[in-house]
Length: 314
Image (cartoon, rainbow, N blue to C red; front, top):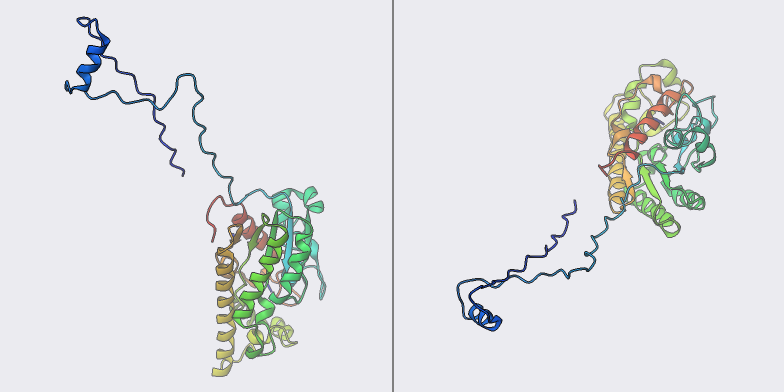
């Protein structure tokens, strides 16, 4: 499918030493005695600085948790990240991947971050067509072996696109598998950053494509039955089926956001992919489900915006 102040400690200045010098008194003892007997003058504040000593070191600012310029990228996920059907029918096309591809028409996230030459040697694609969230821990382990600065995650459509609503991955399992995937990464790469794209809005895909006879013909081959099966049917049962699939996508995205929020080096896209209002022109002309090159380019753009943002962890 298709289709991101420290408050500086106050330093005690060296207070000027107030010396009451009396030309009329030749006795230092008399001056000291007068001060101690409450002549109305407050005692001079003692300086915390010692003349000639080095000033106290200022506390160092902690390094930013999120690096907006990672030097290497690994991708995990499903057929979207493999560029399936983006170049030719029924085939992966990793060179058109939004995450790590080298296609000039896509300008993948890796190319935008690293440049085309560096992206060819410092990015890796471990996504797999047909993958579900349960497959992510194993993919993440492979990604961790490359010591990437950044790992991208886009997965979940296949957890919804099942033969029936009952066969969709339960939300609790989806959440648990994602948490396990992050733990797998952290066990080996505690400082690797993770960008998490939201699961796309499959219901928008149905609403955009159902006007195309070609799209409906392709969908009838069994593409995402929970959402795209019998696309013209508007009876109560069909509406309920589509609504259930839509609500499951929403729940998955909530799970992604919740798990990611507990990891200081994880950044969720805030629903950017889910909210993006794509049209059929950004879908594969072979299946009207996966993103074509145009859709892949938009995914790359959304990811780049989120990864390079100075603030705004979602």
